[in-house]
Every structure is written in C-alpha cells, then in structure tokens.
Image 1 (cartoon, rainbow, N blue to C red):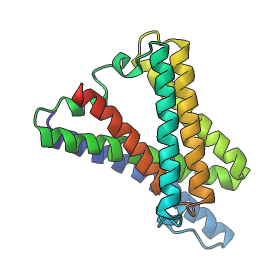
Image 2 (cartoon, helix red, strand yellow):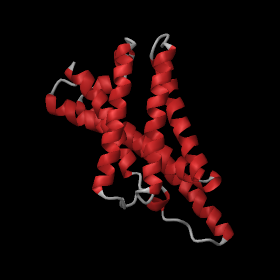
Image 3 (cartoon, helix red, strand yellow):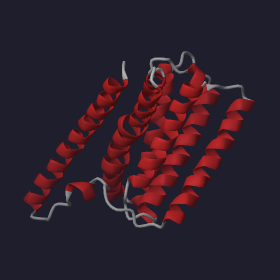
Length: 217
C-alpha cells in the first residue's frame, strides 16, 4: 500500500468510529427530549473540548508515563521478551514503516498513530465509554473499568497477533496499559476539565514510537 492509500484508510477508520459515536449521541439527544432536559453538545459529550490544565501539569504526567514505560521495557528485556518482534508484519505499524518513500512513511506513521489508532480508540474508549461510565457508576469505578477494558482488549489483540505469547508478555502489557489508561483517565477528569486531548496525544505518541521501531530497525 502506498502512503496516500494508507492515510486514506486511517481517516476512513476514524470516520467510521466518529460516525458510531455520533449515532450514540443522537440517542442521548433523543433521550433528553423525552425527559425534557437540554442535551449536551456533541463535542463536549465526547470530551473534545479545550484542556484546562497547565502545560506543566501535562508535561509532568507525560514524563512520568514515559519513565514508567521505560521501566517496564527494561523488565521485558530482562525476561528476554520482544513483543514488537513477535507481532505480525501485517500490523498497521509495520505496513506504514514499509512504505518506500521517507516522507510517505513518516506521514503514514503519524496517520497510524494519531488518526487510525490513537484518535479512533480515544474517541470511543475515553470519549464515549468512559464518560458514560462516570455518569452511571461514578468516577472511581468508571476509571477502573475503562482502564481494565483498555488493557484487556489490547491483550486480546496480542493473543490474536502473536503465536503462543508467554504469560509474562500478557502480564506486562496489561500492567502497562492499565496504568497508562488509569493515569490518563484521572488526569483527564480531575485536572484537565474532561478533555480527551491529553490521552489522545500520549496514545498517539506511544503508537508513533511503535512505528519508529519498525521503521528504523
């Protein structure tokens, strides 16, 4: 696949997820009309709003998550695990890295990280589901639930993509993604006014790093 085709696919996938979220919002609006309550505007309902925290707060969380991820990578190396090498070359990150032209590969990598995966997944997981969980169960239970779902879904992806993955790989992946998701869920609701932009940015950063590993090595 060339860069244009890959980037187009990334935006199509994002569009499908956005369309699904919009349909859910229409259900919210219909329910509000029955109850005679004012509906929440779509963008606010999904957390697509201006962040309220300072850039210093965001930077501290960002650096802390990077350090935590590096520690887990060290543990993975000590256990002689290589989750990236074990994943199929048919993965989107590998396909983006395989594009011949340098500019095309970089733009495809950014589209993979921030549109196809980071954007689409954040829209559904922390924009749609997490905010509904908060309304139904309260903040603490909602944050634990969305973190568990985020981690277990990625464990399922590894199970499907890797032949006979070791238990240690599953455990480390779960810990990494659960902590990542919980910290960003806390920051999003308790420090950043409910905006999904910090989770979106960090999620994209992590996935772009995966692309770079394939591309550079």
